[in-house]
Length: 231
Ligand code: APR
Image (cartoon, helix red, strand yellow):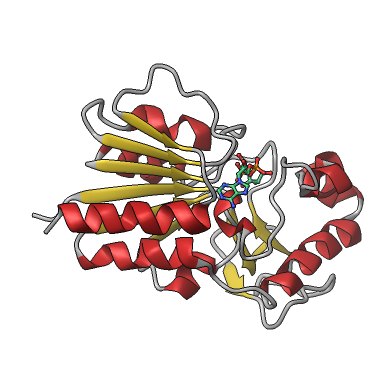
């Protein structure tokens, strides 16, 4: 049976594609206040501002491409059963060819109903507008998990983490829960890798290899090593 590799990615994996991270110097949260653009309260107070923030992010997404880290993860599927859990709302894993991707924090290119969370739609082009409604007549909102909201996909993600033979964490500051807690669901004997130039110290995590390098170079090397070892 193929070994199961579970990968948790964060903004750092898309940084070399040209998408700004959140908490690095120059990150998005330096320029925008979370309370103004990424909470349900912000949306209730000033939906136009929130809409514009995500419209700009979505517009930029059409101008960037996956980088070698995304492509390397897709190539891992040649030999492994690979599942990606991403905190990112971009679609760069999809565009690189990964086939099994769980979006913990939503997806930029989708909108959802404000009365029925099961009504989710693809957004045509980059702009979602006030006045665009779901089939039940309510305003569409960005399909994003905002701060303070429940993370509906965390249970399937934790289940995946618990099944990992190999667990990789790439490009996340591990600041945001519950995503940051997923590593604690991974079996002690599973090999774990953390790729991040500013990797946080993860005491109490066994079998952990920390690679303090950029994802665009370190992930293809790590993937090559794992593919070689599986031969
Ligand atoms: N390669 C690998 N890692 C990188 C690179 C790179 N080229 N560039 C930056 N990083 C790392 C940084 O060192 C940092 O640890 O990426 C991490 C980015 O951290 P954050 O900006 O906090 O992003 P993330 O951890 O994904 O944020 C989690 O917070 O704001 C919310 O919902 C948003 O999903 C997001 C969540």
